[in-house]
Amino acid sequence: MPIPPTMDELINDLLRRIDEGEFPPGSQIPSTQELSDHYDLSLSTIHRAVARLREQGVLVGRPGRGVFVAEFTGH
Image 1 (cartoon, rainbow, N blue to C red):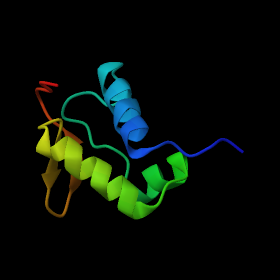
Image 2 (cartoon, rainbow, N blue to C red):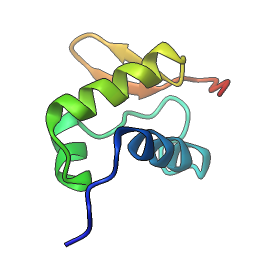
Image 3 (cartoon, rainbow, N blue to C red):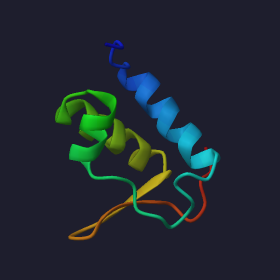
């Protein structure tokens, strides 16, 4: 079983997936539960990573709808 990534590794992988077009600008990212299952990380770690990417302007939260990739990612 692979070792779960650190939060920084999680953030870097999400940024890579955005850069490679897996999550294009304007698209919704998977739910925190789906990300938790995919990366084998706790929900709190996923929440912290998503919060950091929101602070950086990479992700945008839309209440009641989910979290989306910002139209312009200036990272």
